Amino acid sequence: MLDLTSTLQQKLDQRATTFCHCWRIATNDGRVLGFTDHDRDLSFNGVTFRANTSLSASEAESSLGLAATTTEAAGALSDDSLSESDLLNGVYDGASVEIWLVDWTNSDDRTLLDIASIGEVRRGEHAFSAELRSNAHFFDQPQGRTFQRGCSADLGDARCKVNLAACSIAGVVVASAGGVVTVDLANAEPTGFFTGGVLRFSSGSNAGAKFVVKSHRLEAGLRGSIELWTPPAGEIAAGDAVLLTAGCDKTPATCWNKFANIANFRGFPHMPGNDRVIAYPGSRQPAMDGGSLFR
Image (cartoon, rainbow, N blue to C red; front, top):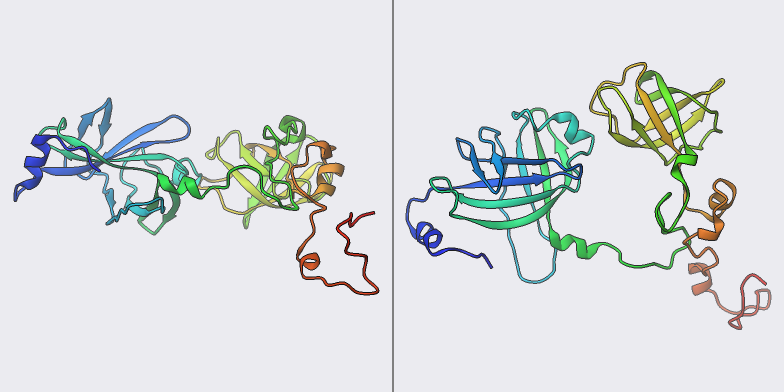
């Protein structure tokens, strides 16, 4: 339910209103940006909301209950603070968005319409669109441990406890073509070592951006061929510094052989699968007496 002041309600009841929308975006790296669909800048709560950014929002519906709702913000890349490279490099992924209804004649008359998070970002030929997910979508996230064969931890997190610095290697870009980046590494690692891992740019036009590695192949000497799932927004130039972190397929074999970390494996590799669930007793089958399947 919206918290409306008496003056704000009176203005809403009039035939002609003086309202506009303002968006306050807080990114994960600490930046705060403000945009408005009004024709001049507005300021409140210590944020200047920039006009002439061509940012607009689609129709949104809300309802009672915990069901997650989505809307969309679309616009042209016409503001200096909203760059194409930041959008494509994931700077705004998961950013918090406050949507305000503001009387542009008196910005003290305003109300907070919604708080959302930026989900999928799509880019067209001349504009972009960003999905805005209501905070109810956090209720869709898995909570606690789940029974699954693969590890439920992420490499290097508090449950995994692997030291990421020990399985990360610095390198320098030699060439880039066709979505494949050729890198000279400080140490040689076998083919596939970085598959599923992360490549982070330390310098160049993509500095700070990180990307998931699709495949890794060891070439002659210390040189590696890295294919990324998504291309960077900026140009990849020879001499760009990168940091490659090993990939993990979350299997017990990888945890044991690659990281020597089986004591912290967070999966259940011996959990019976569907083949055991639908199995039936037979003379040539192991006894189904509730005992161990691995004795």
